[in-house]
Each structure stands twice: as structure tokens, then as C-alpha cells.
Length: 512
Image (cartoon, rainbow, N blue to C red; front, side, top):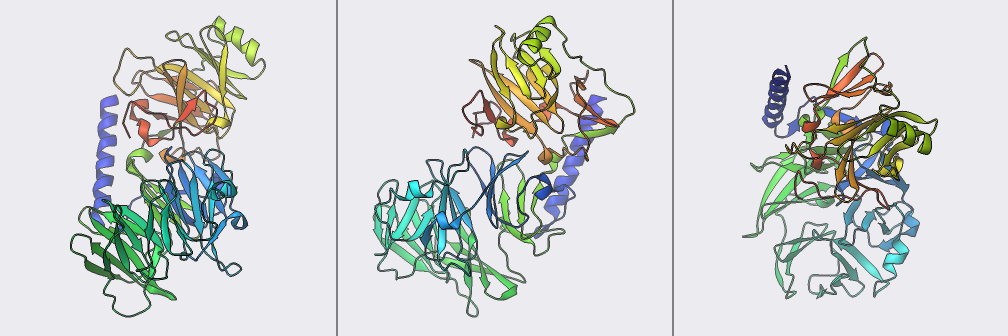
């Protein structure tokens, strides 16, 4: 029965993959999920997306900066008045993370402020640290600020000098002109400076020599670069342009950096972002989101994130969204009980008396796990409380309903310590034991199709069946999944115990 189930699942995924590849300009799949204010997004007006080094997705809305770990959002209001004023950089927000882990956000000018603003954030707690960071700059009068693909930050001062704040590299841009670029990109030792009128200046990074200047052969006038849409595909630079006030015409300009030639693609709409396929075709539309796409982010795990102007986020990944299977059932799975062993009982009374929903003892490690209304209590072989896994480690709710131990890992190592799985009211999580009493935690959530339609998981209702599938009951049914189908690198990983949440641990499943 388990083999038949796997064959059917594989066949469905293959059909979905064929269907996705059939369309080039518009993706038509039924595996798109919506993530919006119902799930904790502070606003539905998405203006930018960026993947942090720890795996979280940064979501820029009209007034907020949000960090999404696949389960929940941590959001902070952006206060432009705290930001560094620079010359206008275009109509879109841009964001990048530097090599020190800080997040830089550039917001456009507004009707009340003719300057664009740069704010800097600590990604661990979302704190605005702009004043502390910019006080270290040698020059207080900055015209432009940029981040490159390697985490370096560059500034342009009043003398039109380009400086790298990390290594002190200085280049003069006086011969290029007085305007500042909208975008800076590094590629194979060359600095590409991209200007609003389409001009591309290529500078040798070591010598500072301007190697060539190229501009697209526009048909007509008034074309302007869309500052959030700069893409590299092999050695070609892809740029999107629009004419202010004209929403019915767009243009993609492709620069062949080997010979400096251009290829122009005219479109019947403004394209704010796009995906480049292997055959050089582009995808910029999605079924049901006509002219609503503000930004697109392909992630490293076969997924596609889509930001919309007014309707929140969309996420696509057919493989991942088919992890869970839902079943209607009037019966209930056998309950594990509050205290299956005397050690569980003793530690439950000692550490969480009156709040235990279920518990388990792992015979291989000697650890005891208490599922409580205050989180998952982790107790070592000497009956000492190592810590509590709660909302500090990515749980939406600290009320843990069920826990099971000894679940075989997905790395085919039969002699390894099994995983611990636990369920909150509306979520599923995995705890994996590492050497030296360390653990890594990941959470199954909406990106995997977890949606109980307002219901919640029942306490003590988590079991591992004879086929190796985990089953968890909710009123009127249960969901099931094969834990070996959970690919470690699809998820944001939390280190436990840790001084802060959000630290990415190296996984044995895939090296980054």
C-alpha cells in the first residue's frame, strides 16, 4: 500500500511539472497558495522580496519590513525619518544584506520628501540601526548608496567618487557625468553602473578604468529603468524599462557583455519583475494575477515567491505543497497518554506541573520531552531542563499538543538517533538531535499546504504508523505525511539552545 501511494504521488508531481513547463510567459498551475494579512502579513501591498542568508524571506510592504520563516511573520514599521537621505533612486524599494549580516533598505522619494531614504536593520531582532552604522562613514554627504552581489556596500559622495565602505576601494566617476546610477552590480571583476536612462558603464574593479559605455537602441523616447529588476543570465545583463504614465508598453533590454550588443523585447505591459528560463524565454505573468505582479523571487528550493501590488504574497512549489494528505475519519488514533513512563511523570511534575499535554522518553538518548501549554520542554539524561522550545524558536503558538520520538531520519542512516516530532494547535515541527546536546528545529507550515480550516490538532493524537507515516488528528479527520519526504534545506532552521532565533545550521542533507 505504501509503494502504491508513493507511485501515485510521483505521477501527480510529474504531471504538474510538465504543465508548468508548457507555458513560458504565464504559469498556469493549481498549486499556488495565498499568504496575506490572515497569516500575519502586516499589509497586502507587497513592494519587494529578498532571501536572507539564514533562509528567511524578507517582505517589503508599503510601510513595513517583515521577516517570514515559512510559518510566521516578524514585522517592524519602517521609519524613513530615521534613514539616511540620498538622491532619488526610482519608484521601487530595494533591499540587500551586507557581508556583516545587516539589512539595507532603500525607499523611494514621496510627495512629502524629495529624497530617497536608506535604513539599516539588525536582522536578528528587526531593530533600526541606521544611525549607528552611518556614523562610521568617512563622509556625511552621500549622494548614492548600493550593495553588490558579494555583500559589499558602495557609496557615492558629493565629488562623484565611488567608495567601498568595506575595503576602502575608491574610484572616480567624474568622466562619466554628474548623474548617479540607479543600480550597481559586480560581475567577473567588472563594476556595472546602471543609469535611469538605460546607460550602462562598465568599470574594471582593480584599475578603475572605464572599459565601455553602452545604451539600448530605444525606439522612441522617455524610457526609464525599473530599478528593482536587474537580472544576470549567464554573461548577459537583463534590464526592464517603462515609460512613465504608460502602463500598456514595456521593454526588456538584454546586454551581451561579451560584445556590447543589445537585444530588445517589446511587451504590451510594464514588467516589474520576471524569471529567465534556460531557453532565454521569460516568465512575468501568473494565472489570476494579471498586471498585479510587483516582484518575483525564485528561491533555492524549486519554489517561486510572487509579490502583488494589492493582494499579498503567492507561493508556488508543486512538490512541497503535496507533502500532506488529508483524510476524513470519524474515529480517533490511539492516544499516547500524559505520562508513558515514570521518568516522564516525575519530570512533568517537577518542571510543568498542571500544563502537560503529552510526553515521551527517548531510550536512545535518555532525553525526556514534555509537550506543554508553555512549549516543548527538553530534559537531558540527568533530568536537567536544557530549555524550552516556544515562540522564540519559530512556533506560532507555544501550546504543544503532542510529541513522538524515534522517528527514522531521512538520511538513510538506520543506526542514527531518530528525530522528535511534535504538534502545536495548528503546526507541525521536527527536532533533530545533534552532538553535544544541540538540536536543530524546523517547522511545517502553510508552504507545505498545512491548513486546518480553523480547526486544531488534538492533544496526544500523533503517531507513527507501520508504513513510516506520521498521522495527526484534528476534529473530523487526520493528516498524514512521510517524514522522509521533508527535505531539510526547504526550511528555515533554528538552533536550540541558542541566544537568538533564526540561526541557520549546516544540514547534512545538502551543503549550501
